[in-house]
Image 1 (cartoon, rainbow, N blue to C red):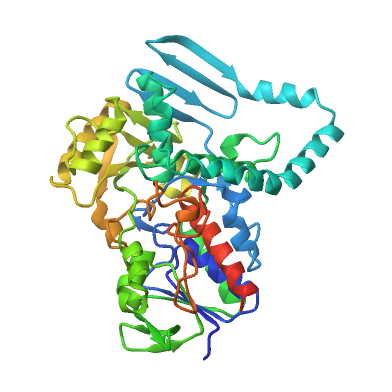
Image 2 (cartoon, one colour; image 1 turned 135 degrees about the horizontal axis):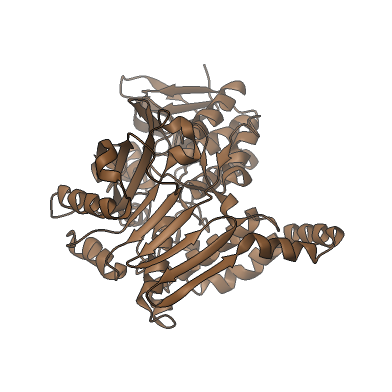
Length: 494
């Protein structure tokens, strides 16, 4: 059977590219080496608990790229998301609570402040006639492409200015710096001493593209009902409906190059499958070095790809509890402060700092009860780690459990079991260094400096949170948009 395109890997970038091509009438084959679809966006079962392999909160949700990828293969409106309605950030003894109704700050440096978000939004809407509101929404939608184009040259000036250097000029208050650090790290997977200010700016423009006046901003964060695996499974079912084929347990050994162009792939079992278009979601570094081979590229290009910095990796603790111990949907906890110093030790010295680590956690079973057996609770805790750490990973495991016991009342006595995932878990997904997201969104690797999705080898493309000139954003949303954009380019130029 002949194929117009082969997609290597079913991460969300590969799924989105495959959906675009299949939706345009091309015969698509998706090859996934694991026995489940989705890569980091997959899940598994244990004792009735549904556990996600990677991230636990998504950006964009039904308002963004996931829905667009589904729509391209006739699956629009199928994915459903629950949105957080109870978030908390704890920086030592300062607590910030946010829900759709209000935000509050309470700590030793300030009397408690509460802002009624719902009332403020309602009052603003009541002051504006519906006709004027609708006109404003329409104008905003039409103007966003122009605003983005006008802002681009200004934003580029900040490609070499890190978030840390920028805020050093304006923020001396350490808790505010720690707040910026944990939020940007959660979004980009790189410490603020690596992340450019421009990446934050571009991401905010992306936020405005999804945001609609009157929407609660928390609607742009969420968890898919049925788990992360629902997204790749839904998209791939659409690819099949469009005449495509999706295989799991099919590992690509190499991309076949003839006459300077990609012409097919060879699987581990020796099967050769031909197609004029090869889209790799296997990681740009891995594709160039392992699947294709550097000898097929200009030495300067191969060296550039080899030298790309991947983002920081992470550890994850997935905990099963025999009862519900928290109503929170998500939580950031910074028990020590001076988070930039903590990340410097991890990143530069490859050692695990002493004391409890900063953790981000989510409670999937609060947003989707099917994630845990009735009456029980599933909580995921994530923190920064490096794959080439000089110390055993269990040091941070013990420190993290200590942090969790302090900030989640009832955790220890109601803990049934937990799993501790290290960078090796993410390396097993196929990428060097086990990055939490992919190629680092850091100075020298953003904006015009991001590798193009189109490789120098004719017919070979890359997708995912790895590439795409001027592509920016947050994790899975960025990977999906990269796949959509790359798919569009192929359709228009083939």
